[in-house]
Length: 342
Image (cartoon, rainbow, N blue to C red; front, side, top):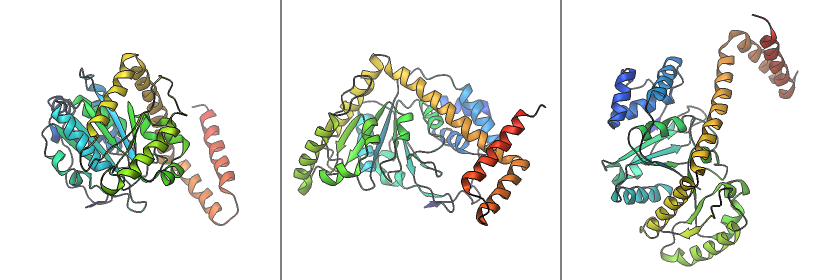
């Protein structure tokens, strides 16, 4: 099903702040879904309510871990996440899965199929699956990822799994939201090594070679050896040594081992205080990103700057000015306005 943001929405939350807070605290999944739609909205009135909601929610007393899953298309992320989720639920945890799909550059819509692919997990009472559009955001996640995580934690979900878009190896923005970052790779070590860039390897906390089953078992063993040789070149500032394992999400082989490694990584960071430090740093990064995004949005709402923007674009199109020079003119105009006494 294609979701087109230009289409008229079927429903809109009419709940007030108190009802939203109360519904989230008792774990009402319908209210949680409405709250997530609210924080994803770009409307000024919705943003005000969303910000008040996030500020009003008391900090969850439950210990929660945030887990990022990334990898190329076809690597089996959804199958693996369903197995991880089911295994977590069997161990008594409440699972929230935030799955991001690429958005169309034309309509901005997405094909949000993860809930369909995770059929068994979606039927579990202690699981909440939320497919979302990346909304053109680079890095494999959406603009409101941190806010959605906070809402899910306030609703009692203590294991939050975030699945990235999965369109390349530049998806390191997820590391700004999670406690443990898992990279999923396919058998075929030579090609995989060439395709993986230093940036994502440096951020990886656990590497899992998936589809280690059937005729690919031997290829998976070879790939695992290559990855282990590469990973020993990298280290994390908290002393965590990056492990590499082989798994089969389809056959649920090695998934428990991956779950144990994820828990070990998060508890390692929680034990020495690094997890708390990391989350504070992530909040600081979120503040910087939100400020930049909001400033740009507000500037472009002003008629004066909107007119300058259109004029400069016309000059760029007719070739009388370069994009670089136009940017310089726009910024200087903005700075002059800021310096003008009011």
